[in-house]
Image (cartoon, rainbow, N blue to C red):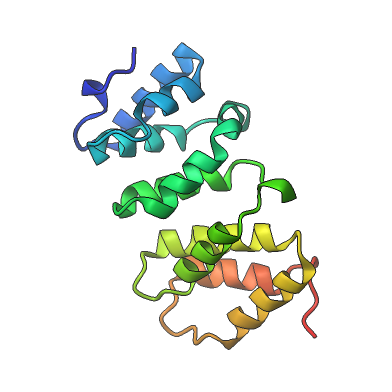
Length: 175
């Protein structure tokens, strides 16, 4: 059984996998997520989210009803690890046009282009901004213009790769 105590502390990859396997055994990823997502101890939420990154596509789909709650967490947490892990889970969930939020798109654009932000958060933010922009051709073109106008010298290899994939994506055209 997953408890708050078992989610406390700094864990290794192996310990995160052990938590994931226990979540899998319990079979209700959403219940575990709801229980620990907003814990006052950031380590509890962080370790729970880290374990969720190990989940399969079908397992992570159980969190679809929590999409906006996970988005809100990513946008409001002050802990970069929790933000990155929440964005990782959001990135793995479906985002139909009905779930696209202007505040989240603005958040993602801001964090993707903030050179003081951690590279993992930048890359995930850029991926999510791209996914949301796919629903709106004008936004997609604007995203590409922004990416083409920014200096890339200080980009991490991960961010350069995401940028390149977006710019060369067949779903858009730059006029």
